[in-house]
Image (cartoon, rainbow, N blue to C red; front, top):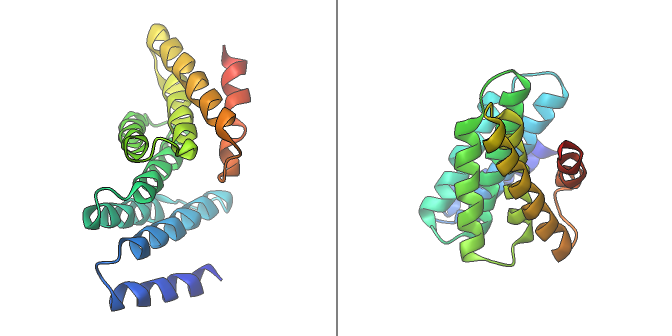
Length: 171
Protein backbone atom coordinates (compact mmCIF):
# COMPACT_ATOMS: atom_id res chain seq x y z
CA UNK A 1 0.00 0.00 0.00
CA UNK A 2 2.80 2.43 0.89
CA UNK A 3 4.50 1.60 -2.41
CA UNK A 4 1.34 2.53 -4.35
CA UNK A 5 1.02 5.80 -2.47
CA UNK A 6 4.67 6.63 -3.22
CA UNK A 7 4.17 5.85 -6.91
CA UNK A 8 1.18 8.19 -7.04
CA UNK A 9 3.11 10.94 -5.22
CA UNK A 10 6.06 10.49 -7.55
CA UNK A 11 3.69 10.98 -10.49
CA UNK A 12 2.28 14.16 -8.89
CA UNK A 13 5.80 15.45 -8.36
CA UNK A 14 6.79 14.69 -11.96
CA UNK A 15 3.69 16.55 -13.20
CA UNK A 16 4.37 19.54 -10.95
CA UNK A 17 8.00 19.56 -9.75
CA UNK A 18 7.48 22.87 -7.91
CA UNK A 19 4.80 21.45 -5.59
CA UNK A 20 6.32 21.34 -2.09
CA UNK A 21 3.47 19.30 -0.61
CA UNK A 22 4.31 16.35 -2.87
CA UNK A 23 7.91 16.40 -1.62
CA UNK A 24 6.71 16.62 1.97
CA UNK A 25 4.30 13.70 1.55
CA UNK A 26 7.07 11.64 -0.05
CA UNK A 27 9.29 12.55 2.91
CA UNK A 28 6.58 11.33 5.28
CA UNK A 29 6.35 8.04 3.38
CA UNK A 30 10.15 7.61 3.51
CA UNK A 31 10.03 8.26 7.26
CA UNK A 32 7.37 5.55 7.60
CA UNK A 33 9.63 3.25 5.62
CA UNK A 34 12.53 3.99 8.01
CA UNK A 35 10.38 3.33 11.06
CA UNK A 36 9.13 0.08 9.53
CA UNK A 37 12.72 -0.98 8.77
CA UNK A 38 13.60 -0.49 12.45
CA UNK A 39 10.64 -2.62 13.52
CA UNK A 40 11.76 -5.32 11.08
CA UNK A 41 15.34 -5.23 12.41
CA UNK A 42 16.71 -3.73 9.20
CA UNK A 43 18.99 -0.71 8.81
CA UNK A 44 16.88 2.41 8.12
CA UNK A 45 19.71 4.80 7.18
CA UNK A 46 18.85 5.04 3.46
CA UNK A 47 15.18 5.71 4.16
CA UNK A 48 16.08 8.35 6.76
CA UNK A 49 18.40 10.03 4.26
CA UNK A 50 15.73 9.99 1.59
CA UNK A 51 13.15 11.43 4.01
CA UNK A 52 15.52 14.22 5.03
CA UNK A 53 16.36 15.00 1.40
CA UNK A 54 12.72 15.12 0.32
CA UNK A 55 11.72 17.34 3.24
CA UNK A 56 14.67 19.58 2.35
CA UNK A 57 13.40 19.82 -1.25
CA UNK A 58 10.00 20.93 0.03
CA UNK A 59 11.66 23.55 2.23
CA UNK A 60 13.76 24.84 -0.67
CA UNK A 61 10.60 25.19 -2.74
CA UNK A 62 8.86 27.05 0.08
CA UNK A 63 11.03 28.13 3.04
CA UNK A 64 7.90 29.11 5.00
CA UNK A 65 6.31 25.66 4.69
CA UNK A 66 5.94 24.80 8.37
CA UNK A 67 4.73 21.25 7.74
CA UNK A 68 7.88 20.44 5.74
CA UNK A 69 10.07 21.84 8.52
CA UNK A 70 8.14 19.78 11.04
CA UNK A 71 8.55 16.67 8.89
CA UNK A 72 12.32 17.17 8.74
CA UNK A 73 12.38 17.74 12.53
CA UNK A 74 10.52 14.43 12.95
CA UNK A 75 13.01 12.69 10.67
CA UNK A 76 15.86 14.08 12.79
CA UNK A 77 14.13 12.96 15.99
CA UNK A 78 13.69 9.39 14.80
CA UNK A 79 17.18 9.30 13.27
CA UNK A 80 18.71 10.59 16.52
CA UNK A 81 16.84 7.97 18.55
CA UNK A 82 17.99 5.22 16.20
CA UNK A 83 21.62 6.45 16.28
CA UNK A 84 21.48 6.58 20.09
CA UNK A 85 20.07 3.03 20.23
CA UNK A 86 23.11 1.91 18.17
CA UNK A 87 25.53 3.47 20.65
CA UNK A 88 26.33 6.46 18.45
CA UNK A 89 26.25 10.12 19.44
CA UNK A 90 23.12 11.75 17.99
CA UNK A 91 24.04 15.38 18.77
CA UNK A 92 24.07 16.56 15.13
CA UNK A 93 20.63 15.12 14.45
CA UNK A 94 19.29 16.57 17.68
CA UNK A 95 20.57 20.06 16.88
CA UNK A 96 19.23 19.99 13.32
CA UNK A 97 15.86 18.76 14.53
CA UNK A 98 15.69 21.46 17.21
CA UNK A 99 16.41 24.14 14.59
CA UNK A 100 13.67 22.83 12.31
CA UNK A 101 11.13 22.47 15.12
CA UNK A 102 12.00 25.97 16.33
CA UNK A 103 11.57 27.40 12.83
CA UNK A 104 8.22 25.60 12.56
CA UNK A 105 7.08 27.35 15.73
CA UNK A 106 8.28 30.72 14.44
CA UNK A 107 6.09 30.26 11.36
CA UNK A 108 3.16 28.64 13.17
CA UNK A 109 3.22 29.28 16.95
CA UNK A 110 0.14 27.10 17.45
CA UNK A 111 1.85 24.00 16.01
CA UNK A 112 1.93 22.00 19.25
CA UNK A 113 3.23 18.92 17.43
CA UNK A 114 6.47 20.86 16.80
CA UNK A 115 6.55 21.72 20.51
CA UNK A 116 6.33 18.01 21.34
CA UNK A 117 9.05 17.13 18.82
CA UNK A 118 11.27 19.78 20.46
CA UNK A 119 10.57 18.17 23.82
CA UNK A 120 11.40 14.69 22.50
CA UNK A 121 14.65 15.98 20.98
CA UNK A 122 15.58 17.71 24.23
CA UNK A 123 14.89 14.45 26.08
CA UNK A 124 17.28 12.67 23.70
CA UNK A 125 19.83 15.41 24.38
CA UNK A 126 19.41 14.89 28.13
CA UNK A 127 19.92 11.14 27.76
CA UNK A 128 22.95 11.41 25.50
CA UNK A 129 24.70 14.36 27.14
CA UNK A 130 27.73 13.23 29.19
CA UNK A 131 27.85 16.47 31.21
CA UNK A 132 25.39 16.11 34.10
CA UNK A 133 24.60 19.86 34.37
CA UNK A 134 23.83 20.15 30.65
CA UNK A 135 21.83 16.92 30.78
CA UNK A 136 19.68 18.25 33.65
CA UNK A 137 19.15 21.55 31.83
CA UNK A 138 18.03 19.68 28.71
CA UNK A 139 15.74 17.47 30.79
CA UNK A 140 14.05 20.45 32.44
CA UNK A 141 13.59 22.08 29.01
CA UNK A 142 12.19 18.81 27.60
CA UNK A 143 9.61 18.56 30.37
CA UNK A 144 8.61 22.20 29.83
CA UNK A 145 8.17 21.73 26.04
CA UNK A 146 6.28 18.45 26.45
CA UNK A 147 3.95 19.94 29.06
CA UNK A 148 3.23 22.91 26.78
CA UNK A 149 2.45 20.58 23.89
CA UNK A 150 0.21 18.38 26.07
CA UNK A 151 -1.73 21.40 27.32
CA UNK A 152 -2.60 22.43 23.74
CA UNK A 153 -4.35 19.24 22.69
CA UNK A 154 -3.88 15.67 21.46
CA UNK A 155 -0.88 14.80 19.32
CA UNK A 156 -1.12 13.25 15.88
CA UNK A 157 2.16 11.36 16.31
CA UNK A 158 1.31 8.77 18.96
CA UNK A 159 4.99 8.00 19.54
CA UNK A 160 5.25 11.40 21.26
CA UNK A 161 2.67 10.54 23.91
CA UNK A 162 5.05 8.56 26.12
CA UNK A 163 7.78 11.21 26.10
CA UNK A 164 6.48 13.31 29.02
CA UNK A 165 6.10 10.35 31.42
CA UNK A 166 9.59 9.15 30.41
CA UNK A 167 11.07 12.60 31.03
CA UNK A 168 9.41 12.86 34.44
CA UNK A 169 10.88 9.49 35.46
CA UNK A 170 14.37 10.84 34.80
CA UNK A 171 13.85 13.88 37.05
